[in-house]
Length: 482
Image 1 (cartoon, rainbow, N blue to C red):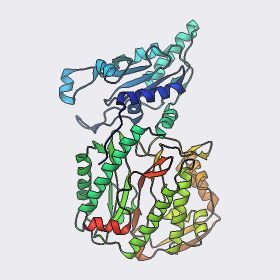
Image 2: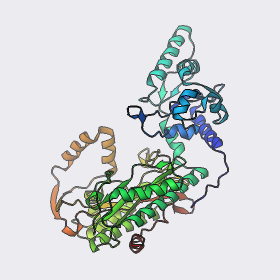
Image 3: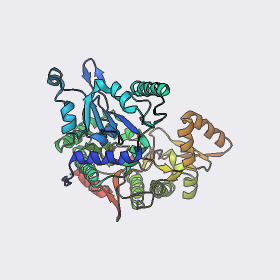
Image 4: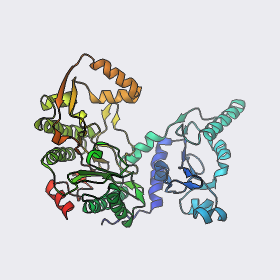
């Protein structure tokens, strides 16, 4: 398995990130809240996982904390934390407390969380802006402190913050390009995830339940040092593979089924993201193999298109071209491959994106477009490549709307107007378009295939972090049979 080799102490990594954010703040101040514990029932909480932005900047792994990043202030990094309390620590574990916040996490100043309101009022004075994401749990404290400072400023003619700025875009840009130590953590998460998927493939056979395969996989994650999954595991056999976010995982697998597993481990707050699809009995049927080979060819073309200066749009276009041609060759869509791309007919069977950023969150922070142009790929950027094809089990024919449109424009409209309003606009645009009905042969119905790997941009080209897990059909069959 991969070994973490970097020598930069974690505290220094977080300090370097704060310095990067400080350059964007200037004389302003940022308020970054930690996650809070979420009750599950009665006196039991859900498993705690720190907010990614907060952890990115602080490395502090306790709930209910707040960080202030104040580059122009006397204390550039301030932490508000729960103080030490022996009675509570007996029940819930050790706390760093005020001293630990300074000594272990590098805070220039630290206070009990109860002091937050007063300190915000004091530290907001003369600041030009407050960087805080409205809609969070500290709205009352931040807005209250800002108004209090403004009232004093009005009476005595001193400076006060006049605006609140969302720090999320700045943090997203910082998180989008990974440092060498961060890539080592991501690589370790990938190695653990590959090992877990291999255990799942080896545990699969007819008659086994999806949750039993899930247990074998996640046991390997834990044994290898992963404290948690990167996201809920999808273990979808047979017709369940056509449900994109299926997580029930309770079906008994049958001879002749495919099993689609989309699951990964988290390590050091970085998550991998892997999908593999394979036959439960160790042998693809002819129709299953035909669909699988189209998806695999699309994934390989998508990965090959990833390069410095390129974009995720180019990755997507390369994969979609293969999907479109493959659907035509299989007789599952009308028209030519160009028709299928221009009218996006493939989206009847491939309705999700090809790629998303990867990092501390499985769908990681970072813009996809700037000034309406795709973000150029740079060394250190990490993302998935995950084409798929899904043929619903009870859908024996499809009505295709023969209408060319710009998929990016439609996506932007949905984000701007909301899905329902955008769909109404789409219906208006296509109401006069020609339509045709096309049959889906029985042997394809109920097949769902997705193949997903994790890619990092290197100056020399794309690096597949999860490529050690087989994707070639014969190799996949061999692992399952073994």
